[in-house]
Structures are given as structure tokens and as C-alpha cells.
Image (cartoon, rainbow, N blue to C red; front, side):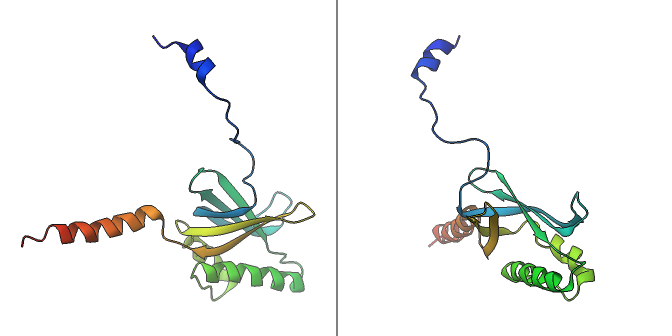
Length: 151
């Protein structure tokens, strides 16, 4: 039988956090979901769901698309096109956006979280990356092939 009291006494208090938002910084993430939809208040936008690779925490980003205001819509589309370009995706027209966004699901990206003075958290997709595990598998396959040369 496990002595729970002994384990309790010898266990140190964790100093990290288990919940809440990740602090500002750069994080390697997996794009779990991305879709164009209306918010609860009826505003059109892109809903991003990233999963941070070390903590497995979800990081959510909302890219607004102010479709009822031409100048603001143009500005919002410019930022969205920047994200798509970073993901090496192109979208010829707004009508094709849903299908292009689906191609982003499953990509690994580096994001940068910066909290502004007003408390707004800016989440920027800064680069795509190849996860370490895939790198190791690729390198392992190459190494193992060289090791099995019969002569």
C-alpha cells in the first residue's frame, strides 16, 4: 500500500502555473483548427486554435474581418494575407478563403505573443517550422541506412 502521508510530506510545492494564458514570448505550435465564422456578436472573423507543443495548452487568436467597413476590411485582409503568406498559402479570392484556411490545419508554426499596454494580446504567426521529432526521424532514417551498409 502506498504511504500517501509520506509522499505528501516529501513533495515540494510546484511554482509554475497549470492554467491561464501563456506569458508573452515565442512558442512552437500546431494549428489545431482555423475557420471563418461569425462571433457571438455577429462580427465576421477568422478563429484560430493553436496548441503549444511543450505545454499542450490551447492558444486562441481572433482575426477580425470588418466586412461592413471597406477601409477597415482592407486593413484586416492585409493582416490575414500576411498570415497566409507566412504559412505559404495563397488565396485568389474571398470566396476561396474557407478552403485555403482548411489547408492551414496541421501546420506547425512559431507564434509570437505580445501584450500591449492596453492589455490587448497580439498573436502573430512568425514562421512555419518542422517539429523536432520529425527532424529526428528524418535524421534517424538517414543514419540507420548508412549503418546497415553490408560492406
